Amino acid sequence: MDRAVRTYLDHLTVEKGLAANTLTSYQRDLRRYREHLAAAGIDRLDAVTESTVTEFLMRLREGDADHPPLSASSAARTVVAVRGFHKFAVADGLAQLDPAAAVKPPTPAKRLPKALPLSDVEAILDAAGAPGTPLALRDRALLEVLYGTGARISEAVGLDVDDVSGLDLDNAVLLRGKGGKERLVPVGSYARAALSAYLVRGRPALVAQATPALFLNARGGRLSRQSAWAVLVKAAERAGVTRDVSPHTLRHSFATHLLDGGADVRVVQELLGHASVTTTQVYTLVTVDNLREVFATAHPRARDA
Image (tube, rainbow, N blue to C red):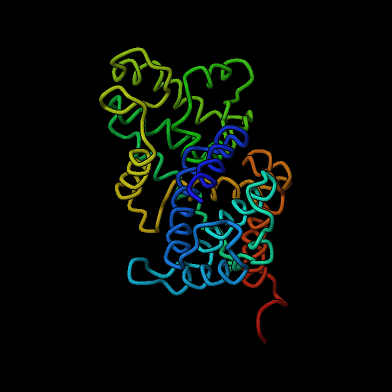
């Protein structure tokens, strides 16, 4: 069983090219699944039944002495890992039957993305760059890139200097998304100005040794996701923005503001790096809600008599 899990993880790493964070999640999910099988006295793949996998899903949702109950979305992610493992085992000749094929992941409740008003975004960006120090120039450039391109936090901190070399030519940055997929995303004048200021007056003061990383920490190394998150939270606090703010909030705001401005959903899909337009269409629900609110307050025949 352990060998089969290792083989599957090697497959995800080498052949599928999954991101490091995704692989870590798969390892954690399959470790818990392996513990469930061991507790049931199952040490062979062919001994696993559909009931075994269904019981595992129930345990995920109910929790146990060592694990709190998982939400529908977290449990669904774990079941997806288990289904992928058993499907691979059959395809690779490690097992004859797929006991997880008929076990469907729980459907999470649809949660609409949270977008900030433009005024809040602008206040956060201004607060990030206010002192004008090298770190402040970095913070402003980082947040301008996050909001100006809709980049994921991992994509932003993963940027190298060479990835923004096209700013003078085609006003675009090269982002590397999930599965190593690359996309060129246009960059507006505010983000270009912030990046230019950081590259000229900020980064040279931070760099300690040769490194391709664009965004550096105070020691001259690549900025981590956690530190980038802290940059945003501190800027929001200084700006007096009391809403819950995360790097994904800026990504949501980027998409919602584009659609509010009339952008086509498929264009937004390409900019966000979504594999399917279905993922992007959740943002259209946000804008429809906004339209309803405006209609209800502005149209003379929309208000109650």
